[in-house]
Length: 228
Ligand SMILES: [Fe+2]
Ligand SMILES: [Fe+2]
Image 1 (cartoon, helix red, strand yellow):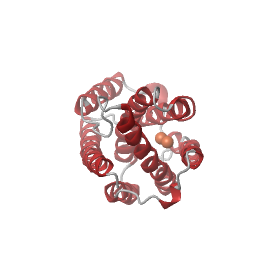
Image 2: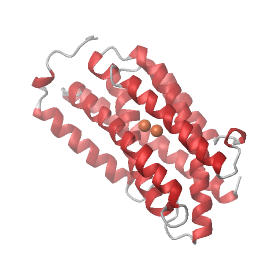
Image 3: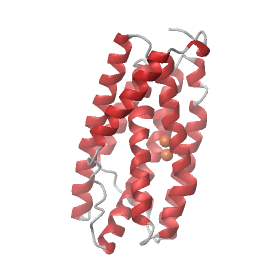
């Protein structure tokens, strides 16, 4: 494995086109598939769905810290590895911000029992630490974080009238970081997916991740609807 990538200036136009096409494929996979929030729900129910997202979000942000820490030693490509501690720091800040917001709303975020499907997703991602950087970053930063930006955009739009303070927290303090994390994924793929075989691996890794997230979204909504 290379410890440093030879010449980023020589990134091929082909890799760039591939990354653009794969982003399109992921976006079309996700069209109408984020079932965690119902835009047509009456305001009280919508607020309950948003609160549920926040409870699970505290857990997800904390597991993201753990996951990135687990991956850093297994990312030999210096140009990519050096971006990860900053991401880890962001995810830890998101954890603290969301947790503090729930406490301010009178909840006990530490008493929340995470959804087993989200637990399994993060356990799996942590266990993927020894997979090639291309596959790991295709899964989490490229596919996962791009989708979470979309999810946060929706959350912000739907929270604006029922909980403007929370909407503003996501808009100002979380979303800009998540766009940066998604950009780390694009950079990794642009640098590393430079043969058809590697591109096929990146595409398969995205598909694997998207399928797993979609399954977790379904379980998430079912549990939110039960009020558990
Ligand atoms: Fe985050
Ligand atoms: Fe993130």
